[in-house]
Picture 1 (tube, helix red, strand yellow):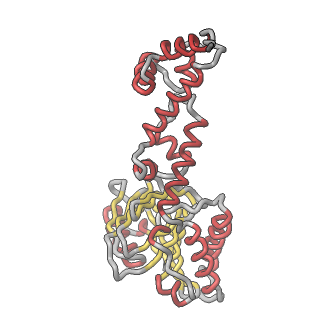
Picture 2 (cartoon, helix red, strand yellow; picture 1 turned 180 degrees about the vertical axis):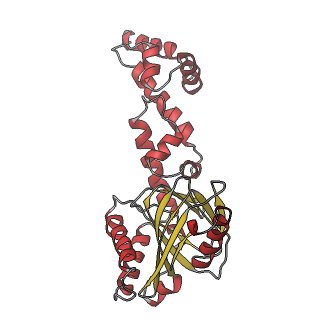
Length: 314
């Protein structure tokens, strides 16, 4: 089956796309990001009783309402454009070659703010069970499986090739292999959420400590460097009563305290700039709030302590 909205009058294109995607996938609320015409193409094939589709579309979002009876797993592979997938409190930001899944039985948001090209593999959850595998766990959805990861570098080309073969073949005898590979790929993303958030906090801390001197560094840029949403990063830190913004500020100020203790003797302004503060006055206020004294007093106290004669005891 192949659908192209440009075959319709511009004012009917968006409405037609809403109907098509709800019929092909599951009922979805369609939210176009453009007005007037809406260009989109969809091609759907069945390969070994698995449905694989490719679509190209103008920027838009779709929202899925929860439906416990719709136990279907969708695996998405963008080939161009960035894709935002949100489910179960997690957000995956996908670039071309990345993979992520969502479960149609639970609420989900999928969005792209640019034209995109996407391959989708639709697998009823029951297919995992009949093949002897567990259904992908709830924490495996909306988790990026990067193209750079071993399982991602294996699975993404496989899904793409399956879509290409579907244009000429409806049976090639790989259903069991496909289910096994998907179970392994999604299982690799299925860590206990607490463990995954602990790993994310550690990775975020490493990024911020490496880039303390960058005045533009903020939680949003840390999240982007880790390929997660800002909300996902904030949730990971909130779990232990912290926030990425406070951790970044604390790391800057603790590094400043170390630099002020250096006998080489940088000026307070130089230290402020070295830890990412553009405004020395703001740096001094923040430093005093954390360490109890101004940067200058802190440095002077350390120097006095270092030069004070040692006491002798009789």
